[in-house]
Length: 148
Image (tube, rainbow, N blue to C red):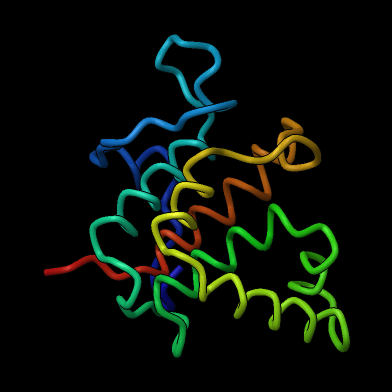
């Protein structure tokens, strides 16, 4: 969250937000239009990335939206480097090298990967979706300033 901002409840913070994209894959398997909160945040952030493009600034200077998208893909899909997002030293350096390599890939492909939902395994476990995943996508959604 931005510094100095209060922490409103999830429901009140998102009451007027619209999700134009619906996740594909595991997030939409119920078919009832009811999505887990992390899937809603994932879809909103993906829509925002699509709207702003790969070179938009973020509050995580010097990162752009491309860098942030690469971070999100690495976190869920690179089981070797992912721990380096929280572990110091060699793990951290490995994660940063791999994040930079991911950032060189096609931006639309990164967004499609994010939009597709968590991969099979750890990030599909319900408690992980409810707490760490929701937090990750909510916080990073706040890291991308809206135009206007």
